[in-house]
Amino acid sequence: MAAARPQPLPPASGLAWADVADLSLAAPTIVRATIGSTTRLAAKDAPGLAPGRARLLVTANVDAALVAPGAVPAVLSFLWDAPLDTKGKPPRPRGVPVLIWAAAPAADGAARLVSRAGLQPWDAATEARVRTIIAASRSGEVPEFTGVANGFREIGNLPGESESQFFLTTAGTGGRSAGTVAMVVTRRPGERLRVAIARGDVIDDAATAVRPETLLQYRLACFLPRQLPAGAGNDAALAADWQAAMAAIGPCGRTLRD
Image 1 (cartoon, rainbow, N blue to C red):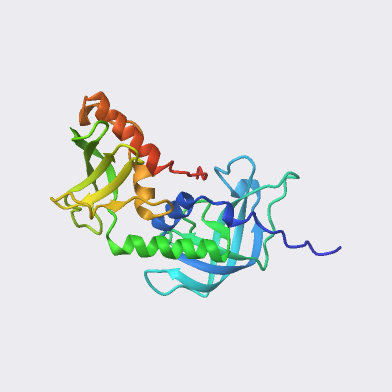
Image 2: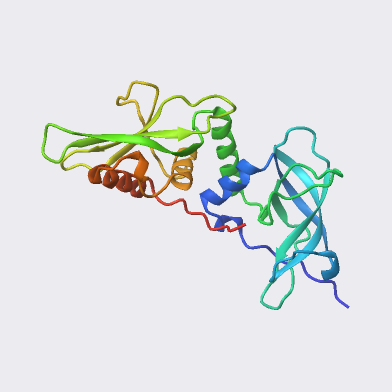
């Protein structure tokens, strides 16, 4: 009987920027590897397996560590709940280069994926995204936003001119307090709404603009409410500025649900 042919995995380029950020910021170890073998476990040995999935024992040869708290074994073995195809068959990705987002090892030292989405086919663009996200996170320049404390709005000198400032709550970065962080929303006649993040006690033109596919945009879009909480201000115009700012920042964009 002919040997089963390797089956490619869906391209990682289908992951949203936020998906890659979720995986990368949750995983203490991220490696580029090549699949050596996969063995499907029997149903009785795969408790809690979701419908449309097969639990595979995967061995992967590590090619490079992108992030690691220490030495990484040359070969990783772990369980993966892989998606079944339309014929009910699991993938057979032997020899396929992949990215692996690994959680802290289990109590017995076994390797674990950070989630069932923690194994994705490798491509240069996704690896570059991982490296960018990790570098931005390690810089400590972007706090982890948790909510909005309060805000106020001032009318400018020209009709239609205004500025709203929203003071954001944060979890700090690396155990340090993030200090004062404000979202500044500026409206000027004939200009696009401007949204920027300011650090420190002085709000000025040095505030950082929010750009797409950055850690700043991700943490704002994915972790702040789309509507201004009632306790943060009861002014309708202020609430409208918050909503407009979140629309300008853009959606979180997550596609993974695991």
